[in-house]
Length: 286
Image (cartoon, rainbow, N blue to C red; front, side, top):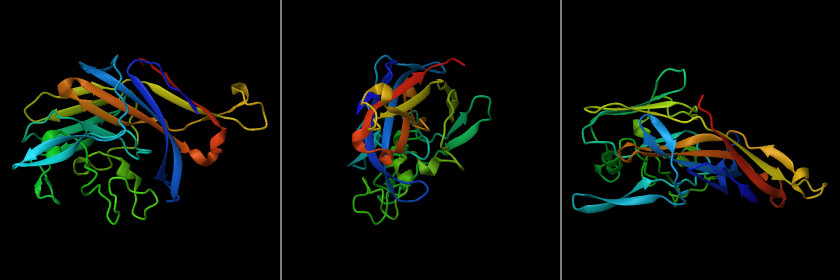
């Protein structure tokens, strides 16, 4: 299938087919997934599209950290290849000093501030390893490690790549946000365009970052079989719910990236009928 992605600066796109657990029936479902990733520079309160796009990560990027003379591997950037994310992953890399108390609020345009994440000055432990939480020592609000509780799935041999039809599988496994820092019903399933993210930490000035107002639309074109196999005869179907589900902020290096993801039931049409995937972006200042 041909893919057409926006040529806007800072953008990178990908299409894949992968399994998830159907949100209502609970059965394994093969879905088509369209990803668009955009790289930004932080300039004041604004995220300004960067001229150099960042690649879509197909595997986790890990770093080696030391503790008491031993070395451990932890995730520094998580793979972008999740087929589906029920919630928004909000990550603040670095920007943390030991003992800081930190909060992250999200303010939708015209709405009240919502507390998504909070942590006290104490660094928690990896209970299974009986050592300090190395991600929490490194990042303000980092990544929940796949191989450790509570993200790790029990009774599955390959926890880092569990089958979506496993009895205990939950699509939230695809989310990398820090569970022990999340507050109430957050993180939410949606992040409004133009929202402001407020990051506070003790002993430091508040950081406020304003998201852009990009709108994404995605369509697949399918040959029906009864008509000539040319684009003007193809069936055009919109991919619903093309939304931001990953926000990674790096205030110390003045960088950020966002990932939009759209998902549809890939079995709606025979595989050999898919012809083209087209993604468009509209940018507004309002």
